[in-house]
Image (cartoon, rainbow, N blue to C red):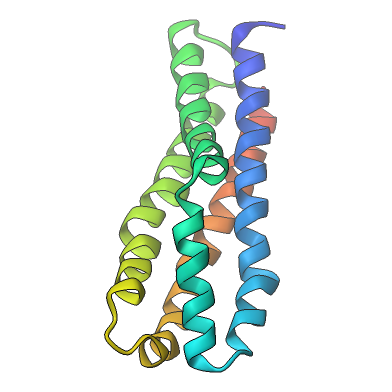
Length: 151
């Protein structure tokens, strides 16, 4: 095994795990929260958002973007076969997981946190948040697949 194949494998695992965590939110966490009364759903999501910025999720998101970039750079420097797939995987991970989190999910989370009427904001929150989260979920899965091919 070369450093490139190790990094590509680790990138596949990290992006796949990130996509899986995000999928869980899209598939059933948000569905459960949306069945709650609006004030309760908003309170639960606000609590989840506060807990999300702790090491378990932050380390996973860092790995799901840092490892893909590292694999792409090592592949480019070493002219490794499959590097084009790794570069594509890194672009998908950085833009689709990290970028969408920054421009889509976090602003919605911040708006929910700052709302004077969280229940009313919650009723506007779910659709847009889920759409952004579906993009992040798909990006994690696509990036994982690209790294499997890259390695």
